[in-house]
Amino acid sequence: MVTVAIIAKFIPAWGLGKLFGFSFDNIMLMFGLSVAQATSTLAAITVAYKIELVDQLIVNGTIAMILVTCIASPWVTNQWGQKLKPGEVSSQSRETGSLGDRVLVPVANPSTEDLSFGSYTRGDRSYSP
Image (cartoon, rainbow, N blue to C red; front, side, top):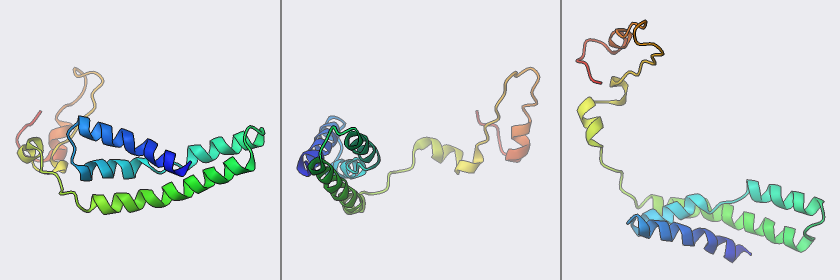
């Protein structure tokens, strides 16, 4: 049960990683972030046991699977996440400066709103849509 659960999480991560051209480090990071399965599995097995759909052996196997996947997930994520290089800054953020330089002013009716509010909070920098 544990092996099937791990393989069932690795195959989609590997397939999508190859489809999108990810490196092996990215694939393993995606696998590590998706392999843990505790909450929904625990809820489903609790309900199934209460209505006597499964026996104690299946419950024990499910608990073992939860234990292994919850230990494997942070380990895999840590191992392959450290090998990744931080991404480069996008061209949009290079043009506009830091994140705090942009102000979004929600407007319901542009004819009645004072759009200069964004200019006041932003300072005397030039206009950028």
